[in-house]
Length: 167
Image (cartoon, rainbow, N blue to C red; front, side, top):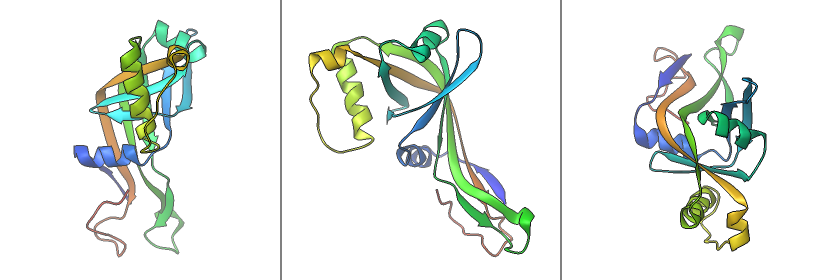
């Protein structure tokens, strides 16, 4: 089995769009790693997330805004030879993004970000009350670095090889 690096932007965006949750890694004020699952929205190389106004993650990000955000499609078990244990592997794809969190304070930009987040989950339009927008912390992460891999791809010489990557 092989792991293939993906660089085509439309394929990267396809992998991101298939996800309902991303995992956000940060460093706590104690210097410890901290990873949380979050809902997200994505548009034009920017990820949008939201949380409560206060909490462990907000305090950590105010101290150090660097984050690593990962996405992974639902893995499936695959193999090259059903009789050979070492030929089994999980097949799926992952995207790893790095950037810095900027907390959006402008009301209209927060509403725009919330709409981008909701677009990830539904095509409905929403309106938001002033207290709802004011009480949410919107995170904006411009992607500075991105890497994408498809893992568990059959080797071109195997009988299970397909000429097209599947996510």
